[in-house]
Image 1 (cartoon, rainbow, N blue to C red):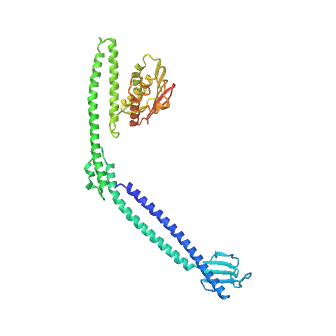
Image 2 (tube, one colour):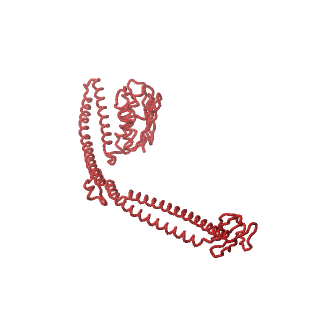
Image 3 (cartoon, helix red, strand yellow):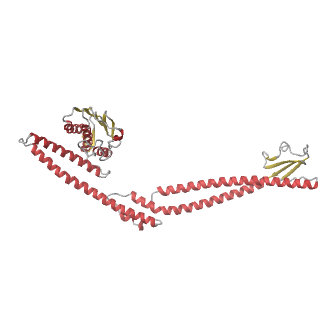
Length: 423
């Protein structure tokens, strides 16, 4: 059973018990301290009131002297000769003698000054012992209730934890819905757990069916779409090899052939994106410069009649291991956008060891447009010819799939710079 949820429950209950224990200790300590203070004051004043009452009734009264209580009385303006030196400087009020477990009440009336000194060591021991017993009893009861509640909660979440563990080991192509049957779930299986189990079983069936449909689609699409494109390519090759073919037909056939190659590359890109990320596409080690030069040659016809210079710079010759057509599709879309939106100036493709940079002097983009260029079917210029607004979306998704992040930097009227980095 995964320990995530039980561990969190255990931590929550431990924190609750610790905070409650701290509250009990602080509360009982403060209550006991206040009770001791109140009882001491009450006992001292009761003793003093008793003495004053006896003094008023009989005139002279013998002050008691015991181990617990000592009372001294002084007439106005005098001090008893037997008054301890530690009591002489005390003013009226309640005092605690330093170094002694005794409390002293000094009370002055017209009849004289009264000193009541009492030891409360035994009373304090009794009160603090009772407070400690109360504290331990409360904490023991708290821990017992917390432990029982934790066990009950753990039994309640055990089925959810078990289901989470089973789901975490799912394989998309081998989901066994029978493992999630309610009778196999441990712990207290309530109606909620049964509903969750049933929902997960339905989800597992849908996931398995979805994975199978995806695999059937990619397999069938790969065959059914490539076959007619292969026929088109072979037919155009044969027609182009015919020496009697008119020049205008020759140009049309070349356009058909380029469109067929572009469609094959796009189909490959879509099929790669449609597959699961864990399934690595078949790749090979290739020279990045060769792909760049090939895509630049394909893009040159888009600049026919425009005063735009398209050039390749940089002496680097990086090599990558991936399907070459993936990089071709990414670079082809970036070059196509640069050619469409650049009416004059230059388009530069710079090759470095860790990146390819496509820099143009076209119309550029505003910050608002730059934030949306990766959205599918979004087109900054709705009236521009060619494209359906999917190019940059495909570029970004392919870059994420192969670890080649794409970044765009653009300013209106100053052109756009696109960078494909090789992680």
